[in-house]
Every structure is written in structure tokens, then in C-alpha cells.
Image (cartoon, rainbow over the protein chains, first blue to last red):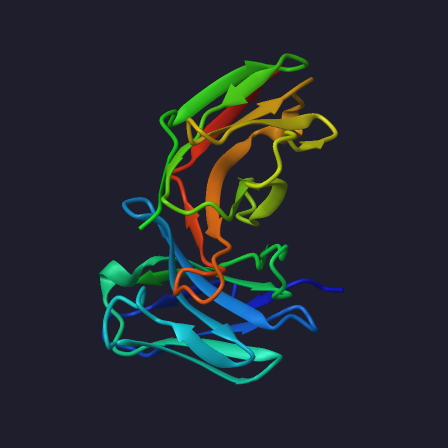
Length: 114
Length: 119
């Protein structure tokens, strides 16, 4: 299996622009997680899905952030409008949701908002 | 809410020596998993080892082992025969296994420990 695939690997954009990050989970996994990593806050969970349904979005910082999972093999995290403080590495992870499940991470997207 | 604390921002070790990374956590739950993840400069988060809270036996994976002290809420990682490839940021993480709770399945991470391996 190719693992969790995230795109793009790097994204540079200007303040106010819309940014869309993409994730393809491991085939067959029914949980998908979006994390954000910053120097100040470390790794924090933004939102997670189970069977394409958002379960907990309490970590989403503002209404500017939205996430969707239209099918079992694709998810997006959108920021509109983007701000410099959104600059971070965004990780997607997936797991097969039995109680022993391990989360497998993608390589992350480094977002820089100028 | 659960919290995970790694009190060592940085650690260093000589190649072939042993190093221990510390982690403590706070929870009122009895069912949970603990993990150590490695993040090398490539950024990829790689699972190193995991421990089920209900198991008293410490988990081991080749050169990596843990010292799990449930009463003390401590979960340290020991790396034996350190190799240059072990150099990375190491994260301790907690996951609730209380089904039905909103924190079920979520990973809570510590701040990380940067490990340097000297040749």
C-alpha cells in the first residue's frame, strides 16, 4: 500500500487566498484525522471523520477552516481566507477503526501564508 | 481533558549507547493506548511503539522498549544501541479507548523531544 498520500507537499500563498489541502487515506481505513503542527502549539487535532462523517471538529480554529470527506478515499481541508498565522505543517492520518487501531500519517503539507 | 508532557526538549546520546526519553500524562480514564512516534527531518510521523494500558508487560520493538508505570502515569522510551538514524523528534501520544466519548480515537501529543545521536 502507498500509505496516506497528501498533496501538495508544500504550499506558498498570499494572505486572503483560499488554500485547499488534500488527503488520500489508506484503502479500507474508516477513520481520517487532520492535525496541525506549529512550533507554538505542537501537534493538535483539528477534525476527524468516521466513515466519511465528521465526528469531532472542536479543534478547528475558526470558521475560516472547513473539512470535507466526500468519499472513503478522499478528504480536503480548506482555509478561506488564509492568514499568516495559519502557516504550519498539516498532517492527515488514517486508521482502521477497531480499538487497537494505529494511526498512519501522511508526509504532511507545509503551508506558508505570506 | 487529557494532557501529555515531555519535560526534555532535547536529548543527546553517543552512537551505540542507550538513552531514555521521558513522558508523563494525565487522565482519569482506565482504558487508553500510549504511543511513541518518531519524526525525522523528512517530517514523516513514524510509529515507534505502542502500549495498551491494560497490559502490565512493557512493550518492546527491537531496540526500542518502554517503561510503563500506570499508577505514576509515566511512559518512558528507551533506545538501546543508538544509531545515527535514530536522530529525530520523538513524540509521546495518548489515545482514549473509551468508546462513545468525543475523545475516542483522538491522539493527544506531547511537545516532543529532539534526539541527537553523536557518532
